[in-house]
Amino acid sequence: KAGVTQTPRYLIKTRGQQVTLSCSPISGHRSVSWYQQTPGQGLQFLFEYFSETQRNKGNFPGRFSGRQFSNSRSEMNVSTLELGDSALYLCASSSLTSSTQYFGPGTRLTVL
Amino acid sequence: DQQVKQNSPSLSVQEGRISILNCDYTNSMFDYFLWYKKYPAEGPTFLISISSIKDKNEDGRFTVFLNKSAKHLSLHIVPSQPGDSAVYFCAARLGAGSYQLTFGKGTKLSVIP
Image (cartoon, rainbow over all chains, first blue to last red; front, side, top):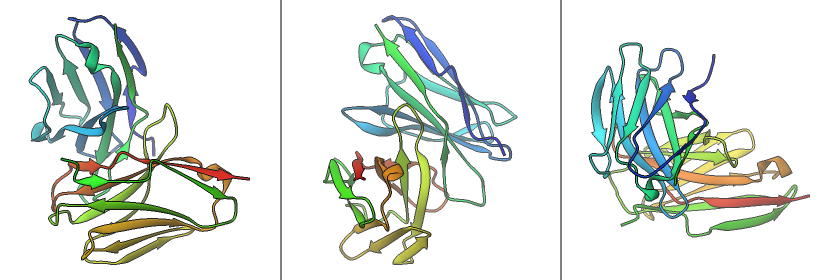
């Protein structure tokens, strides 16, 4: 079974721009979560989607948003980028029958 | 307020010996705990998990112990191998049906040949 895939793997943007990251979960997994990893804060939960509905949201500003499509693929969007948004963005998927989340390789975002 | 803490940023162990990675948590509502291993430039890889109703779970060389009264869990790797060198994250879930994980900041394990 293919794992979680994320595109693109690397992105460079400038302050004020916006960015969209994509995640395809493991086949059959309907829950998709997003996390931000930075050296200072570690791995922090952004939000979680299930059946196209956001069920949980972490403590991030409204510039961070996401959505999930009917095929369970998910996108996250960051608007008005700031230098501090430079991070590794990780997507994880999970099935209904398991409490385990499986992570993709991440998208490395650099904001200049 | 860090609800999941890994107080040792790094650990060095000789090949063949036991590696013990520790994790403490503060929220008694956490009901499920996981350990992930992460190499640079890759996503975390799931290793092993434990439900709060158990105190031990084994999978090959990996064993996780949970002490609920102390709000402490540990990951034992026996025997340690050079390929185990990575950053290990402890994570906790807040209640059944929640897919929000709270992570510790990680412990970098170096296994010396």
